[in-house]
Length: 145
Image (cartoon, rainbow, N blue to C red; front, side, top):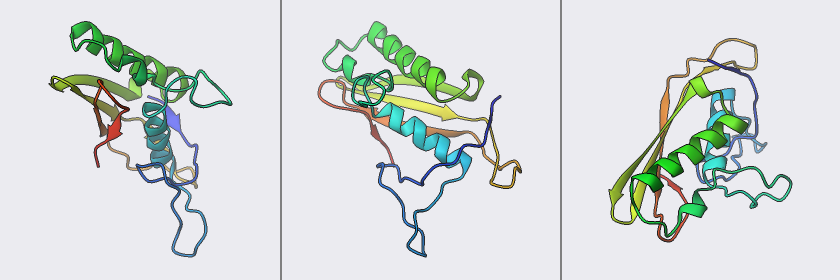
């Protein structure tokens, strides 16, 4: 398992910056920062982020492909390999892709690991499953809130 201590500006699941009660930018803890990074990757295709075109899970390239086991496995491999390459250690993540109906896939990302607070103490971060609905015929992954 990895040990993560990176903190970033707090974002809600839609990607909007959160403001604290005092009017300042809110800072997320390391676990929330990691989940935000995963969420950003899930919703980004390679080439979308101009400073580094390698970044993203590239789910958009599956739009319009036939819904068969090959497509499901290729999407799962794309999500998992890109998250492991750029965001999180392999032992701290699991990805499942499941057909929901003839035009929709569910993408389930289980996030684990060890996370530190700002004082270097371990956070009580339980494995969380982030769920996305991917209308592969016409759109991008949308988080289920």
